[in-house]
Image (cartoon, rainbow, N blue to C red; front, side, top):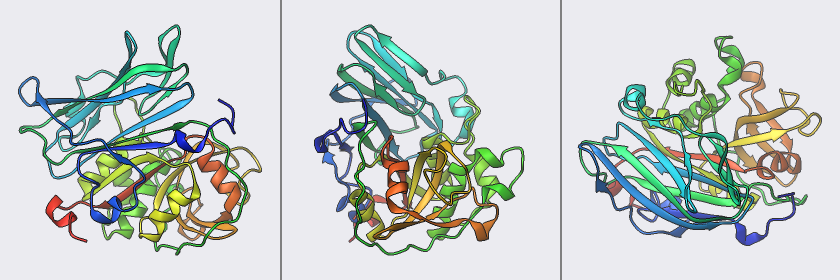
Length: 347
C-alpha cells in the first residue's frame, strides 16, 4: 500500500499478560489489554498458547514480541496461521539454553506464503499481509520445565507504509546513552552488528555493561546465520539481565512518551542516498540506531555505524529521521532491567 493510504486507526498494540512489564511502561504503552496468556501442556516440558488476531487488511504489518520475565524458558517459537491453511513459521529463539534448545525446530519462512486470495510476505520475525487475511491466529510454543507464569506478549499491527507529515514537534530530554561503534569491532562481523551494538548501548545506559563484541556474538541466530533478528537480540539482552519488547510506532508522539519516561528506543531505519544528511552510511535497507532525544527540528541519535566512539553521536534532521524510521515499518525496541513482577508493580 502506498504512503498516505493508512489512517490513524490502523495502529494497534495488543498486550497479553499483565498491564505492562512495570507501571511506568503500562502508563505509556498505547495498547489494549488482551487478557492473560493461557498455556496448555503439550509434550513434557513444552507449553502452547494461541492468540486470536482476527482479520488483517492487506498491507498490514504484524510484529509479535514475546516479553521474557523470570520464567526458565529454554526457547520458543511462534506461528501465524490464517484462512483455510495459510501458515508462516516465525524464527525460533533460544533463550536460557541458547542455540541447542532450537536446533531441531524448523527455520522461519522468508518470502511469499499462503494461497491465492490470502497471501502474505513472511519476514522471519514479522509478517505483512498482501491480501486481506481472515481468522488470523498466533500460536506460541515455549520449552520450560514448568507452566510459564511470567511471560507477556505484545503484537503490533499497523500499515507497513504510512505517510509521515513534515512538522516540528515537542522537545524531549536527551537521554544519556554511552556510545559504541560497530566499525571498531572484528572486521568479519563489524558491518552486520548494528542491532546488537545498539542494544548493548541501551544496556550500558541501564548499568548493564557487557563486552560489545561478545554481546554481538551472543545475539547470533544460527539457523539463519544472522545477528540482526529482533527477538534474538532481546533474548541476548535477557541473558544479560534485561527484558524488552519489539513494537511498531507510527508517530513521533509514541516515541516522545517513552523518551520522557526515560526509555531510549532502538529504532530500525531505512533510507536512500541524500535522505539522511550526515549519516555515516550513504544509504541502508535496514539499520539500527538508538534514538535518545527529540527536538523541534533535530533528533539525537547514537548511530553505531560511526567510525569510532567519538563519531557515534549524531543530530539528524527531525523530519528526515522520522521518515527514515516511521514511514516503512516503524519498528523499535524498548528495554528495561529484568526484575520480579512484584517489584515491577511498584510505582
